[in-house]
Image (cartoon, rainbow, N blue to C red; front, side, top):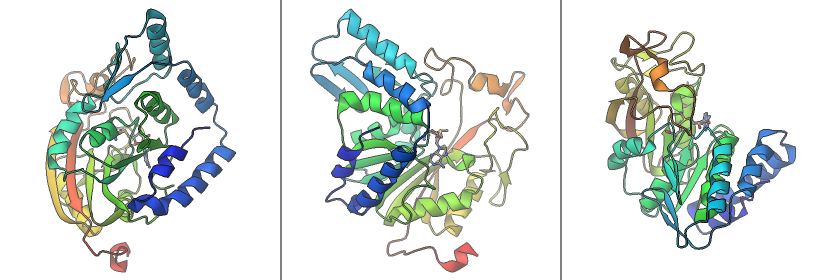
Length: 334
Ligand SMILES: C[S@@+](CC[C@H](N)C(=O)[O-])C[C@H]1O[C@@H](n2cnc3c(N)ncnc32)[C@H](O)[C@@H]1O
């Protein structure tokens, strides 16, 4: 239903060539057994996108421009199709005259994270929980060779198709599955990003082990997640919802998260950034109508969520998988 062949072909002659056969088999099975009414509905909007002549792409600003401006009819078709794919949580994007002002200003997170990441030039990257691939474009702009986003949300996958249909970059994709469903123990990626995913996992240490298993020895993990204040022994498991989300499990302190990473077999662990989430970074827009962060905070005390928990704060940690490291030593798993 979605042609991933150009991406899979692009893995030839890279350290990810070992992934070509299992990935092909996994996608074949997925599409052969797929029973999801949303995907055809989303893909119908892709069919409505207008053909545009010569296009240039600025990946730093995630902006598409056309040599000849679109006529009114094409502009209307473009906007209608893109609005069919609402909500746009991640962005912003500019497609010709249309500015997708997404719920999240992902450029602000990238500005916080990027200075702490090793040079991405020539690297093969896994972006776990990539959403629609916004950060993948910034990684490509920073010189990445391959960016494989993975995300189980079909809407994110199709939003990426809408953008990449114009960019035409076979080396950047968003694949429709979770990290848990991915080919295990690839040990092939130079850099693995996990941003905004760990707190959704009921078993965060298993998530760290899976991230590590995707990395080559000597590779780098960039981990970004919700945290709370506290010492290296403290993590908060919200009773019920957290900021209206019902799938939030562990919010460690940054020091506890560093400890988890060391326990999980990473070295050179450092806390690169800790920043409270603001209503400038996450807000309602015409591309994500309805509620957003302001509605998830206590109206009379914005240091608390609506449930009375500490308001969202996010940390970025960077760590290395030791060179020469094989699988996790057994005692780590006891
Ligand atoms: C809060 S968003 C973060 C998106 C983006 N990485 C960012 O930092 O802005 C979490 C994303 O992770 C995806 N996700 C949730 N569980 C996942 C898993 N187990 N493996 C991969 N992606 C997952 C969700 O579909 C969602 O798009």
